[in-house]
Image (cartoon, rainbow, N blue to C red; front, side, top):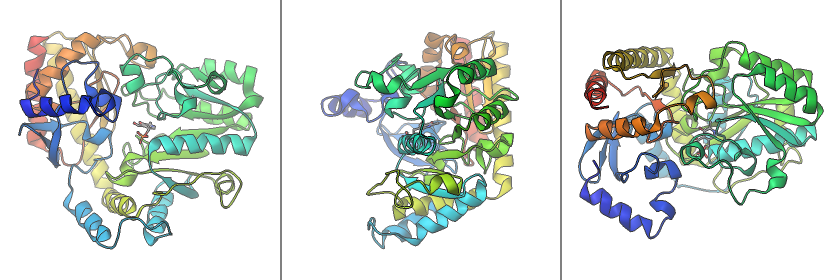
Length: 428
Ligand code: PLP
């Protein structure tokens, strides 16, 4: 397909040495066919592959690159830090500085622990919820993705949904038995579930804006209902804001929807493009974490100065309210134009958008949960994906992922995207 010879060569060599040729499944293009390109470099909203082809990028590292690739101020900060050494295994001032930024941006986080990925953040958060409540069960939602921790691989979204893997072998039934997965946006089911198991439920974990079944906003009242019921049953409410944190507002989805969880998980943007994760919440809960308390969790690379520095600079730039207004405006414009052109060519699509994350679902019907998302025409999506790729627009290679707009996406990038979309619509 549209991948050039050098990328193909690199991919075929990788297949011999790396499972499926990739270090994270969605990158393999499995569900859309063809072979993935290899990235050579990125700058702003554009990336260049090993064959020298340019793309307007909407994957943006799956979310962290909200300021665009290789932002000069972030690079400068990282370079300065790196010159002083890369890992010490002793506390550093950058950890404190980032902790201050995070806790002031997200008031429900009084104390925060930095880890190395979103997966680590969510795994630690449910361990903490279980330790705090002395209960076993957790509730999640079909199509939400919380990383690859054992407890979450039940009706999961993202790559799990893309590859059609319902549950993963290797995950013990004893563990998944403690996970209850319910339809997103369905308050009745949550109530029924709590009536039956309420006193056994340690936590409800939710993507407050779902991004891993494609973008699905919370219905009005959904997050409020979760807050209410968790309070009533003394269960903890965990917002997995790995994707939405600093994305849908500086203070994340909890700011945008004005609902405060007990624990928040972060990742992606908080590391400014470096590997990072974080979980935090009320001091009383966080003080259960070792060495303040008995719940064990640790990490050689946790609080790494280089990651902390990239996060600090990124958050300082994002603090300016104007950034979010610009992102909102550009994303709204892009989505409106894409929808208009799909309609003109009679290709039924539903586009869900919250801030600068959105998904073009190839279905005429509203998408409010995973079952709706799965009604999308994934064959048509695959054709669309390759049509866009050929024209130099890189969107996530799965119907069940979010596109990300960055502050670096300028008029030219948007117009190239809209024009390409129009051309592809004619071919579908
Ligand atoms: N939670 C959410 C909402 C995510 O979107 C992701 C990754 O996409 C994760 C958790 C896992 O994060 P990571 O891939 O850094 O382990």
